[in-house]
Length: 375
Image (spheres, rainbow, N blue to C red):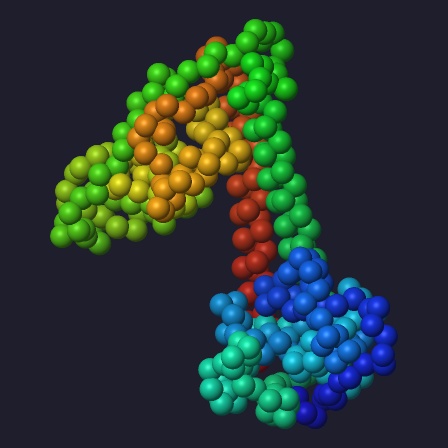
């Protein structure tokens, strides 16, 4: 690094430039967007002036980047960044994107680990000095090859960003549909309705339209890791992508949920849902609701409007009781209208899931490229 880098430090006195910080997961962010306020304070005058295509090494420890992370400045021509970052520029024949991506491969982590004097300082930064950082050794091909590798990584990152935006748009569409297709407590008809359906929706308590079964935990001595035993669902950790994801099994049957029923968490976090894809034993952290797809989506609106959060706020820890669930006031309509609503929501949910899978594939592709385009 020392052969291809030059340290960047200090500033020219301009204090009206964007104040940035590095997120290990998202890269450069404004302090306002990350912390909801500027945290520079009086230290602002000591910040480093970073120019476009220059880089900074945030030697902070995080789950995403145990030994810190490097990011190139791309979205701003100039910005002010914390002086504690190791900021640097590269010689003209080296690509900033190539060096940034090299650090993201984690192939240099073993070297960084050797330079740590202790795990972390009081401010959470790893004890890696700039001089030690400059001792990191890497393999750099000629400029033409660096540029080609950088273009590939840039392309995949742009695709990931676009697909993330599309996923967020689909999630917002689903949220809007839930808000418009179902009736809230202040109205008798939904804002958005299928043709040929008229009249007010009827109000009922949940137990009037579905059977609620509260979970009961089996004895821990009967827990197993044998898939031939009964699947045990104890809480949100056993649910993934709105389905049961087996993690623990049991030989003892207490309370059960059956395939096609709704399962809902009743302890922190409260109100998370799944349509069960298998029979299972349920522990005290969940409840089974013998309801249809319409009820499943209706209950999602209760999570959105924080109904469960309000009910559980008075408890020692976040939880809801059997009576909270059974006495929940809901509004229902005729069966055919409910079926159409459920079918439409299934379609929107399908596209959300499909988009999540697309994003996962692109993220996997990026990881593959990082591991195979670098030495």
